[in-house]
Image (cartoon, rainbow, N blue to C red):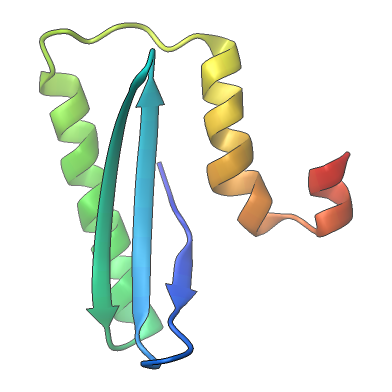
Length: 89
């Protein structure tokens, strides 16, 4: 599970956002005001682990369909890690 590391042009700091969608439910974690990109990467790993732990402990855990997962992957990973032409295809 990963999310984009984004630099705030106004403040010069970094922020991360992780979002998981499961059968109509959405969990989102945001962490702001990270000074360096390395600090943001470390925070991303930590927040991703915490979110994964929450999802594993969720008693009403439902299986994510392949279509839901691919929609999530396309928006959270492919959009920020592929070229615009690849993403549009």
